[in-house]
Image (cartoon, rainbow over all chains, first blue to last red):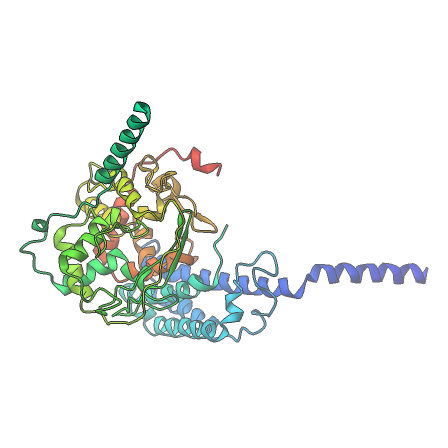
Length: 152
Length: 301
């Protein structure tokens, strides 16, 4: 009886280990989650800038503060060596990231600067948000231009 | 003997006809005469025409005063083209070219030596630009920094390495008329920005087997001939974005669901972000007015 329980327990453990998935794929999933958080907060600012939702100073400030915080995180556990689009499935992170890590980090710093600049003006009115959207989106694009694979 | 003579004569006639049909046809100097180039106006043309997108060095950020040193490579089914140095350097750039010579390169695809240029350079779009715009653009180009990087040769095999053949291509595809008719107001302004300066159709319109734009599928997108992925169709039925979303996208590179654009389009956004708001709005007005096209042909590819 005891043996049976131990066997069952071991089988359960194996199942959990499998569900944890490969650490490289987990790193890629963490990156993607991080990008989704950007997307949600950009959606608030961009929605207001485009007139798709009413401007709300407090909400705009909250979204911009979130972006400033998110872009300030230490992301070393996401950008794991061996997790590029040529090494694992379900990622668009090009190997060029690891070949040019300094440039990649410089672009990440530039995003943080753009997010901080947005946070400084986000509560000042919709025009201020509109004026800063180009720089913020441009910081996203300057990294994706070089380091993200085409989507199909 | 007589048959052989006839064959030789026919052959010679054919060569003569080819030579005549394929000759470069420069623009009349009168088109540009009396126009004074204004670099301040030319700066807007420069960003609308996206010159920095191809002519800056690979990986270089354009900045306010881009160094047009060339060197970006473009893989196509016809060979690999390398964007030349068009900085103001007198030896390796365009510093010693005349205004008319540059206008002929930009609008007629004719090089300084009088030979045809490959249409990887989008002169088949720029031919639709107004002569005054080209003169302004040239005036702005002359304000940019010089760079002494030599231009690299294209890597093009037979038969496409016979430049004279491009004369036939031009007979088919060099056309100053607008593609989409019947537009007014902002949509008409947008047509000029898209069809002439922005040369959007060079990528977003699929090409024929001869490498010209397939006008029956104008802006319908398709597989990326230069590599991975698909180039999205921009007709209203395919894109489905509002005018406001399109204009904002051209400023920030953020799609309506706030994903950010990557690849070559990120480079395009670096140019369109520098346009005045009304130009981005005009482009949007044109795109939502595009006729929908039958895309069944491309859907299966």
